[in-house]
Length: 383
Image (cartoon, rainbow, N blue to C red; front, side):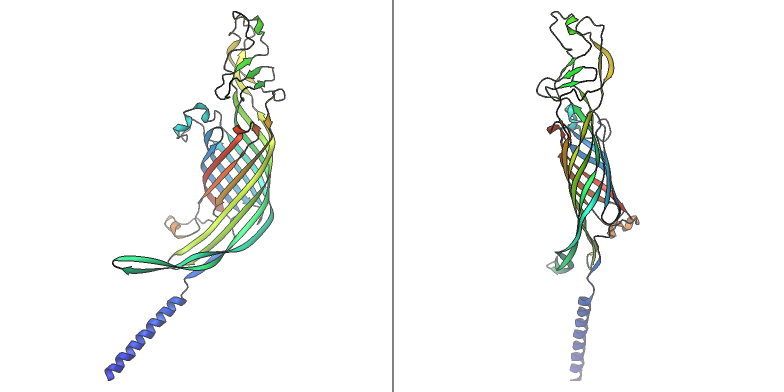
């Protein structure tokens, strides 16, 4: 009887101990918010894009640098520069782009702009989301099964809306459109023929050549039979006005069995209207030979510069354009930590960001100036 009482007491004590251990485990902290502040973001973001894919009338690869600096908590100063890799450079590795000569630009293209975001609204809202807070495992028949425990939580979303204003310059390749005439300041006319400006040979009418005095057998030609297709560059200078909407989430949580993790994003959509003027740059071509007496000799072998008279040239210019874009970045402050610890913390020295942009650059023609570009960049953020 005495032994029976001892066994009973030990059993009760073991049950109480087990119950207490479960109570301690249930009361243990398994989910904790480390920070949830979409206003606590860096002042300076620098994006370095080693490859930007551009698709316009041509296809090319570019290198770019972007910077976003918060002058205060809401106002953002922005700037970017994109430079095309030359065709002969090491980075032009996609040979299929160059099977047709005109697919890759003859001259290097460039985009640069500087602007500011002027805030018009800045608000925070809470959104519910499900979060896995614990993982349970069980073993049956030699297999291990896992299941999650979920909880409903609130996540702060900051919506920052702003007016975008700034200046932009864009350098692109210029082709004289089909069935058009380009007139230079000395009166020389460059004329394209056929249906395609890319493969049209064109003709040239030198201003100081009397074609009727040249001996060609019948004196019927009033132009020089030479490839007069004009290929040069054009520079656009203008301003833009637009709208931007950013959604910022900056939350870090600690979850038992998972460790520290972040729900972080900085997504921005923007739309701009561009207005300005496009200037066709001077180009080199064969100078005329004023002493020629036979047809064909009026084209010298000496190259000279021809300056375009845009007032006399009747090529339709589109002074308006637009662009729509979306970009994604991480809003955390970076810390330069030891290499072996980088995979164990949320805040890292660099992140990958992504962006897309579609639009129409002002210039000569519509189809030639429609474009799409996409890129991935390595982003550093400071302060």
